[in-house]
Image (tube, rainbow, N blue to C red; front, side):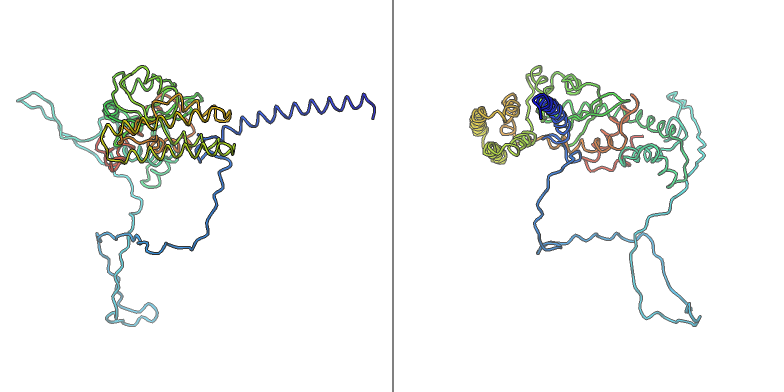
Length: 431
């Protein structure tokens, strides 16, 4: 091979090497979207393999079985025979009578079309016009139908087409897609006042967990924001992920404690509102530090140390001690976290996660002073899960009406569920 040919081959291989490097970096960036500390299990393309420990099948020794308690019978059916079905001979008295309780659902029922004759009266004493009526003000659909449609759409998470199919199968009711949407809007109008009451409860709460997740609205990026307490959940859907949304919902004078992740909007809100306290999510931080330790073995000791600090936080919350003791414990934990951050400094692999933890340094130990506050933001993530599933099924929202319907109905259904109430019963009563 001549010198020129060698030079041409070297140049060709150099260009190919450069091309492959760029392609590799591009693929790494794409892969990082699906494999990172913030990726939920539902989006992980390559989930972690867990080692299954072989054990004996069945319930462990000493386990108390859970048997469903049969309800009391509401009706009785007798099954007696007079003649043999094979030879037609008289059978006489049975030699044994067995009792069985069977739970059965009714067959699909046709809709009830009720004609209401409504008398109106003029009271001579007060001058009011009155009528003995408890029906929806508009349209010819009853409360049960309105409530059931909304429940099927949002509680059962069925698309519009499936909602129409279900109503047709169960009740023989043929409704067009537009009619389903009109019913939903009618329900929303009735529930909007309760939605505003819920907003006021959130604004006056002592502890609010906040989180957000993306959703497409007619192809554009919007955000579902969740503001949830132990008893109430409030959703808003906005085009922005800015702190002004937190300001809109909680107001300028919120005096409680916020559980949140490390998104900049919460820190900005705290800067504006000096009265608010923040508890950063330890679960997020542990995942991020763990992800670095999994990739770089030399940082595993730092990961174990960070987990140990978290365990001390959990133990401090459970201790029944005075406020002075809690303040002292908090100072000790802050000093240990400061040492951890200083130890991380030489490790360039820890730079990103170290910066995040350092930026929220004052917000990691609020739960030590206020032990009723959780050290993580898992509550908000759990309550947001229904919206994520609904988003997966529906894909996106189409317009402002869809936004209003989603945030209103999902807020109230989630809140009713939190309080152990039946969404259908509560929704019907609200109508």
